[in-house]
Image (cartoon, rainbow, N blue to C red):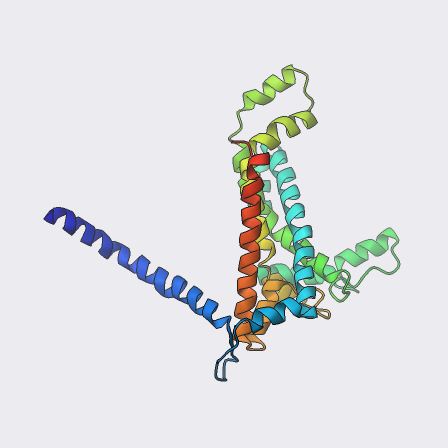
Length: 291
């Protein structure tokens, strides 16, 4: 008995730093921010209990409706775009593309590159007068190419495009790992039976890759609601909040307007939305994910 007690005590002593860190830097801030969402508090003023006023104001605000719409629009561009492109790249690299090792590193490099460096390069590409993109469009015959980062119509798609370009390498690596677990003899048997590459892709690759696709889908959905650095560096949420998404708006309310209670309520609404979407994905998982 004594030895067992000593073993448990020793284990607790080794686990103590992790447990203390988890409680101090995770659980307590989560609980404190949830309580804060029911208060009206600017950082230099006295906090006053507001009940559900913050949540009610968010749900009735036209600005909030616009921001939620922007977030959904961004997700509709980012999630299918990044997953589709990552899947195409992964299949090409898995099928013996020449210099595949080089291309794996090249496609993954933007993901580990500094976001500031990435956005500075893309600001130059999107520049209205001197950017590579508009000069290329004028060379093709487009007389008045858009001001990508200053036009409310194009600002959010531009941010989504840069986000896809930066993250697609990470998703590609995950899908490539999934592809390499598929038995090559399945493709050989399909070829013997006369199946064309397109049929092999939809009847073998997609079903057997569905678990990896599901994992990437969850990651991409979460990532699509958390875009901040690229938005901050490219457009600052403008013009006229056209590229402001929920994560960026939380930052503005918390650290620009100092409306900490309101920002906390926004954070928990975002958490609720992500939790609901994740549960829905797990609910429908059995319909398309092959175990």
